[in-house]
Length: 257
Image 1 (cartoon, rainbow, N blue to C red):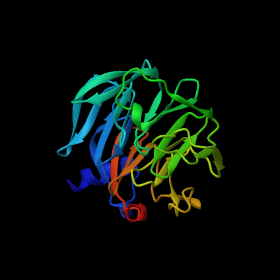
Image 2: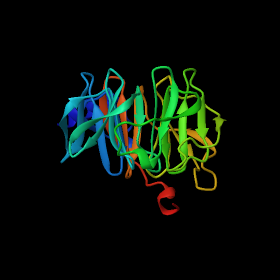
Image 3: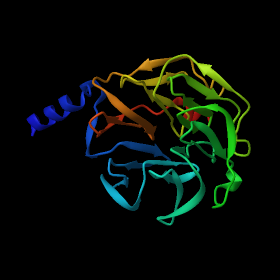
Image 4: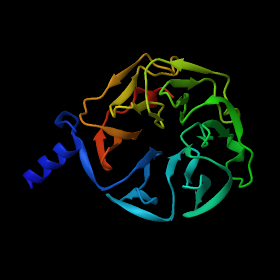
């Protein structure tokens, strides 16, 4: 048993200092929010973490999200669905990536890297018109203190003054650094993965300074392709699809919001 544990750690490249655990199964993408974790496999099956195992939900998806705005998925045809009573309800629009982590609004990007969002009062409708946001991003994620995104040359942007009723915000600002994807936690904390597979955390985010001060690399080795954070746990996916969960201190934001 000890040998098996050592092999698992070596295969994933997770350091002992992080006290990380290799979870069962393999995924290509996952999202953690509001105390729940959902993910999709390479063959587009959708799962959620329940009773210490991945439980499959009927239907297929390529990108799933869970957060204050609910549980949503987009499939390989870019069709959008909302989970209601464990049934996927089709919603108008086409996205390649979607995020429900904002202050009860939905956001996402399409295949042309156009950015869109949906205000709180439209979330339960099926025929909706999304609000387009200026700019081009390949990945976009929101939290209680604003939205973050990266474009196709790995530049990072922060969208200011987004709200439930004005998800478009006012303007975007360039943030130093380089990332291939970025995820905002339910508490407002921000994590990302760069094009070389290294995981980073944005330091010193607060309501007074929602952009924080700098990027801090985490004590992880090897290469990763996805990260998400919620409820004191960091969830990361290695290049080989292995899912790793690492205990991570609760953000100070939870006591400030």
